[in-house]
Image (cartoon, rainbow, N blue to C red; front, side, top):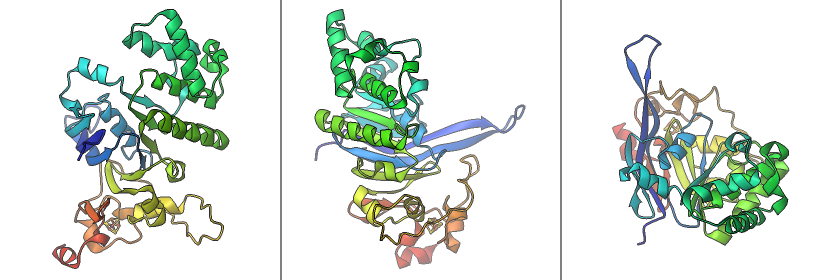
Length: 330
Ligand code: SF4
C-alpha cells in the first residue's frame, strides 16, 4: 500500500517549566501525548478541540518550528525529524501554514505584491516580469484582482487579508497546508466564502490540509476525517460522516451537541460541560476528561483509557468501548 503524504506516529511534545520564579524544581508539561494520524494527498484532516488542547503545538511540531520530544513524522516518504535545519527549510516550501489572524501574520509594511512575492524571492530565481505574472495569477486564484498588489494589510478587509495570506502560502506550490483556525477571526458570511475557496483550491491543486479549529461545524464539509483533541491527546478519530452521525467519545458528543443542526426536527440535546479543560501542567489521573464527563465510571478516575479501534477505520480512547473482560481487569 502506498505511504500517505503525511504520517505522524506517537508524536509527543513536553515543555519544562520552573514551578516558581526562583524555584529549582521543573515541571513537565505534556502538550502533546503520542499523537498519531495520517493524511493522504488531496485529503483533509480536521483537528478540533478547546483552546489549550495542543492543536497549535501540533501544527508547530509538524513544521518543526518546535522540536518534538518524541515520535515520528514522515512527509512524502521523508523522516522530517532527522532532517538538518537547511533540509527542513527547503522542505517547508512543500508544507505551508495559514494562521488565524492575517493582520498579525502579514507584515504591515509590505504591499500585496511584496507579501506574495517574498517566498518566491527567497526560494526561487525569477525575473521581475515573471514574478509580477506569478503574483497576478495567485491573486486571481484566490479571487482578487491585480489591484491588490498595491494595497497594504490595513487597506484590506479580514477576508481579503486572509486571501492574500493564502496566495502567499500557495506561492511555492505546496502539497500540504496547515490551516490554523483560518476562519475564526472572520464574519460568518466571509467564513463560508473562505471555506468554499479552500475546497476549490484543494480540488484544483490536489492539496492536503490539516484544518485546526475549536468549532466542529466549521470543518464538517471540508474534512474527510476528524481528530478530536483533549489535553494533548487525540481521543477520537473517524470519518467526518461517522463523527457527525454517531460521535462515540463523550467529549465529541458534547462538542457536537453545541453545533447548530441543519435539521430543524433534530432532537439533539445540548450537553453543557462543567468547568474548563484542566491544565496540561496538572492533568487529572486516569482519563483526563473524567472531571467533566457525564458518563464517568469508577475506573475512569484511575485507569488511563488506551486508544482502541471501534471499527476498521475509527479509534476512540474511552472505557465505555472496552470489552467486558477488559472492564473486569480495571
Ligand atoms: Fe468519560 Fe470514562 Fe470515557 Fe473518560 S473513559 S470519556 S471519563 S466514560
